Length: 331
Image 1 (cartoon, rainbow, N blue to C red):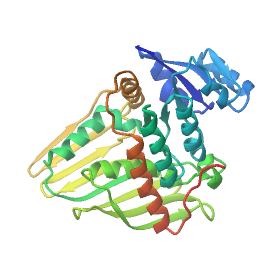
Image 2: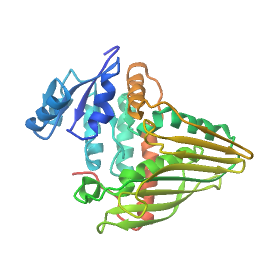
Image 3: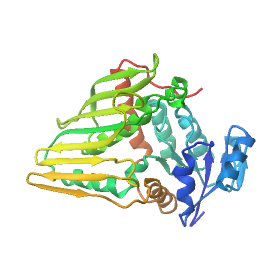
Image 4: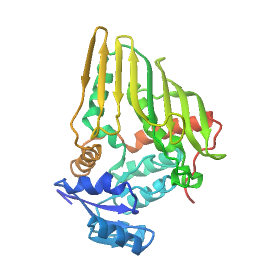
């Protein structure tokens, strides 16, 4: 491998076409070459539908395939850590869907293995690679808002299909794991590079251990506060937003997850207000560019395994504050 990254997909997940298969078709350096599923028949059907040449009837077989340089891991949350570790042992780079693992302890184990391997392990926070998010980070880091007072992030969308794996505790489901991992990551981005303390959290439950919505209050070391809201089913039906308030003004973002659709960044500084929007190339295409640049050229990227440990640490703290058990990896 010198100028091309051959990707294998672990599982016939519905997100895979959006996240890697379609973006790879327009890439000059990435190609999805293989897929594995729980059965060869399921893998073959997925491969036929999406034009993938190589089919494996088990994840182990895909990891052993010498024609695969890297794997995309969109398996259920409870399996992320297990199969990322297996991929590293097989010498494969990994693009792992978020949340990175079931909890922070597991994330730390994976991060340690990633560091030791010298391979690229990227958590798939695709929004972070779009020019919109790059601009958000630039504004926050510039200090133009002045000392921060409060930051907030909300990721809420309706998912009333309660048989969905996002509501399955053994698969490490829950609103905070799904929508909430984004909200936490966004709040940390807005927070100026500081890691927050969780002051309180309250969940709306679908079952004894499963949150269908969660709201948490944060405090950062410099004194500014924060809040995160995540919902799969609540009175907050649909809301995707970020906001940072400083002494000199505010930054607000509508739809940070989907700049390929309508989105808007608004900056208010005392008596001046400006709005910005960006191109409609997908967040996933930018993410794949970053992944292949890291694999082929060693280019740094923000959603590292170490960053994932910090994000999972906040998520764990929110579950504790809400009186809910931490999610656990599959045996």
